[in-house]
Image 1 (spheres, rainbow, N blue to C red):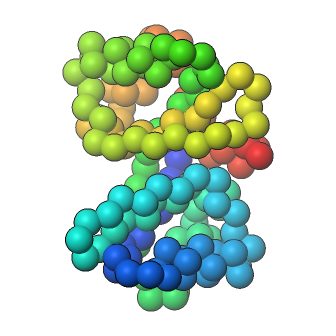
Image 2 (tube, helix red, strand yellow):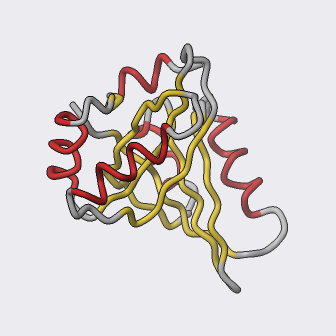
Length: 145
């Protein structure tokens, strides 16, 4: 499958709320592969890529956090200057808008991983395939150390 699941958690923008989220996952032995925090004045959105997204979502919801599961793309890009620009150019030329994006370091030889929420998932997948852009699967993410 060319999509992965991301958990978005809405948290109050106050000291300790991010800690609450990661502690509840850690205490349930759930590994976080990537995390992003976007803030606003009162609330923030914590975006998480976890080894087992379904279990992570259940644990988050069970602990009274407001959360949702979203399908996103994980793309492996060469860890060289200009590589991200090549991917973004291909998406631009296909008319695909990126709603948000974040990256994380991983022990993948010569690659970095970018997580993308895009305007049209199916068109983005076609664009990536036609431009030889590697899309990672859930099992690829599980194997990332």
